[in-house]
Length: 434
Ligand SMILES: [Zn+2]
Image (cartoon, rainbow, N blue to C red; front, side, top):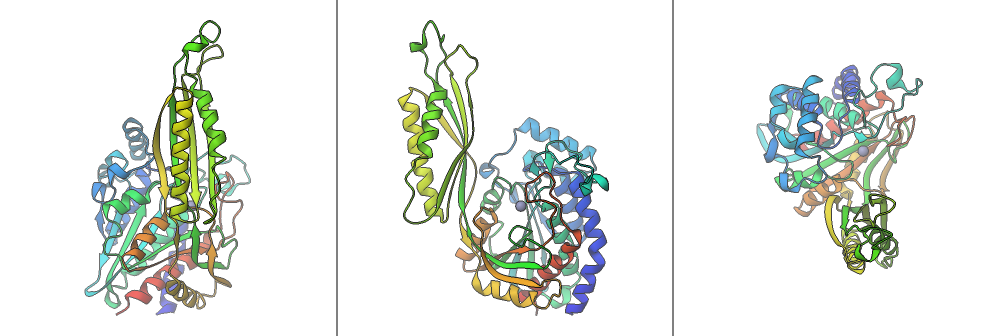
């Protein structure tokens, strides 16, 4: 059977490459994955999966960092002009691009969920002629969006795995649920899908990322721990403008309030319980040289090795922003733009992944567990499943890259998609075989 799975996946490689390139060319960033998601949904339905879409898949109130309604409509129209599936697209109004695709087998058994992220990064792909997407005609045609993290590859892997699993109906029990998640970048998409119930009654969950700590072809990281919990805030400070020469005393300087806040945010005492981070990554304000700045903006993020440590950072950050605003006589608002919890793969599931990987010749350097040291909102889903008594792991599958993740020259070796798909199929089979 293992040989059959290997052959089936190998046979699907040309389709995986073709799909990956199509997604790459039509890159769509978080909450605007209309074309991408509509085509993936159509394919999953054609394969026999039952779809859960719209507000049943994504909780609108819990969406973070989504574009405004007008912008979303424009992206939806663009998707249609680029070949989106019209019927599926209509079910994604308001940016509800996340969906579930489930196949239930005849015999009762556990539910296995596979999470696949779909979004591109906000950023411009290089026009360097040496970059393969330029050479071979699949550079992103959407300005300001580029698949620079490999999520285009993840969808190709997921669709291949879904196809092979659909053909194994007679030997499997329970059910397989694919969670197609939007807006992973900025960790915005998992929480609203969890709130809508994507992890409900899930016994096992796996997520897979190409690259990262599986730095080259042949590498495989079977489990990941040390996901940093993180919170992303947009802060708007409101003051009062006044003539900078004639009446500065009448103004309320929002820019100075933001500066005061920024310096003190970076001075939050570090916590004895473990590593934390804080960065004000962007600040702007004011309207002209000769007026007291009535407005200021800060984009900031906190992180912690545990959710509690991240909470410590946000509590302190909130106190400092409030105090800095008051000190300068200003008001403020904080909008949560993203966030996720810490997490750790279940050791017994990691062991199972390693066992399977040892029988896949493509994986020559198998690492059981790695400390991530970054954030991925999959950890939110995994934590929920584990809390309900289930198991979860996050796999990193090696590939040769042309540049680091999130770099405008990012590309990967498409042949590495096949062993990743094979691994997922065999992992699901291990837990769902009759
Ligand atoms: Zn990524």
